[in-house]
Length: 376
Image 1 (tube, rainbow, N blue to C red):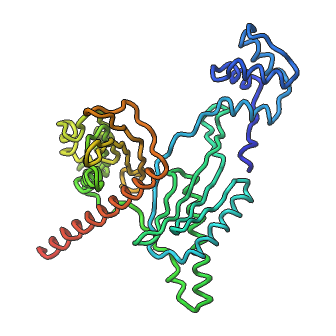
Image 2 (image 1 turned 180 degrees about the vertical axis):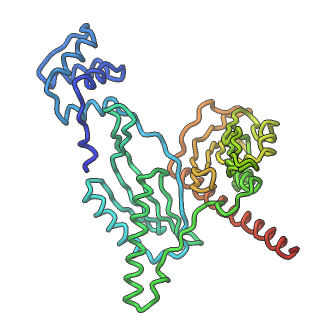
Image 3 (image 1 turned 120 degrees about the vertical axis):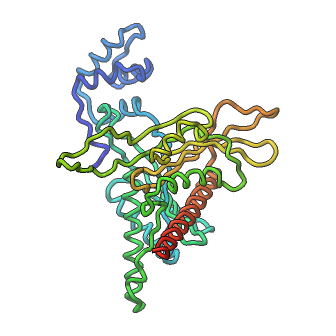
């Protein structure tokens, strides 16, 4: 289905839309001029909206009004996966071109850019739908970049954290795996060698609340070249225990609080969060600031979370911006967005740090498990 053609609005919906403050007087005048009608700036807005909604209106009218009422898509968190056995670049480029053809056949825009460093960027423009919004805001044009970056451990696949780009990423990886298997057959190699080894940042296999909280405390303190400045937001989670059946056969239904959030300054040093730790809560989302080491340090703000708090998987993050140092111990009040180079720099750092922490925590858990088995 062509997502740009889903509008079918009524006269009332159109009238209500034109009554919104987002529609300026100049924009209203242009709408009437397109019908050869000149309006006065003194004419009541409700009367203008009512009269225009009576006209026959088409797709192009709807598109114009949707553009007026539409809002800029918010910056999304990023997520990534590591493929340790990705094939050579020629197969990756062929897979990216195949994905491009599939997407353009479905009316999405796509182009592929490869640079000398070996990185491949797949730029996609697509229509995102949200039917919970008003009629003229249900379809938003979005742009996304799927980055395929070579590292010493394999290839990192990085993308915006949403369902549609996940579909595109899975399409790309499926094409890569299919092409790899075809080449393996041609060369007489086992097909199993062409199956992609995809690794995610996850602690699904470790359910210890302490280990899960340790992941975040190590992450916010582990960005090389930066000192932790403060934690401003912490979201904690406590999985609901399995229902316990009492001796009389009835199920114990008690009060269970599964989520809590704390905001302010020095959140991780508060008595409140320590009391939540004691009750089995662990951090699942955090917002923190770091300060550059050295003279005239800028402050950077980040946010990271596990989308699936119970299973501790679906890791995503965002570099929210920078507070520039003014001098004399003072900073600009406003946080400004990072440039593309800074975003990539911190993406690499957060991902690398997170993966090293996962490896460390898994080793610790395995060591405890081995020690326990020896005691038994």
